[in-house]
Length: 379
Image (cartoon, rainbow, N blue to C red; front, side, top):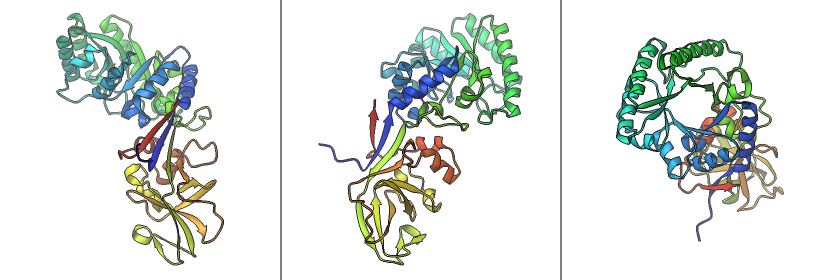
């Protein structure tokens, strides 16, 4: 019998299914690529991928070749795009298993073509144009040269151009002027590619925010990521359901005298005799240490939200149950909800992010670094 989990990440696949169906409806005629990079934003890439495909998604997106290989090893045969590669990677396996590959430079293209020759089949490629994010992608001044090289490799049968794509810098601000300027640059690059290569090419540029707010940018394919997991990138995403919750249990309840410091550095001291609960989860499990310094960090235990006091430690946090001797109803072994979907008024990943000035992406992808953290998947 395995030991009881000190902390649990619970993944609601029903919420994933609900979110993907909503995104499929929003996409209209555009196919939906569900992004499952970073282990499905911490939710479990394989489980999310299977659920998303069942809910109507047609593509999957990943960052690395290793992430693509994980999906193929799990028996997932749907189209997969892998888009961020380092020099000297071996693309043979990816090409052999039909993984679509992002290409942003002649170096990318040469390496992919080498993988195609080794695999004995053409590589399906998506050409990325940098329209203003200045991260990955071919700069406009080098686009014509890249297209010439793609045409040569296409003629030799080493690559099969599938799509042109890009990524927005300000999609979370739907009226930002850079969205239209990036779109104009994209349209020019897409037109140049279809002309030079003499074939129709898919166009995709909409991430979660653009999928939710800019139907004019859906084109052939949309690439929602964070929205799949129920977290809203733009505000007003009332139809989305957060899929992840983080839970633990009360390890100890104790009374501490007035005036005692609590946790490292004694940034909080008991104002009166207090009952405190120890919860065995900390920054090694994905609870940001800086949360403890906000003075507003709460968890749900014993039927209501209660403040976490003192610093977040590597393995534990301390919860203030109130003045000693009051009927707080909390006993050792009680479940503690650190964050969830918020439907019952409990804390959420978005609230954590707001407290510490980050984004909810960072919260959910940061959960689960410790082997003892148990993951439960609920269908």
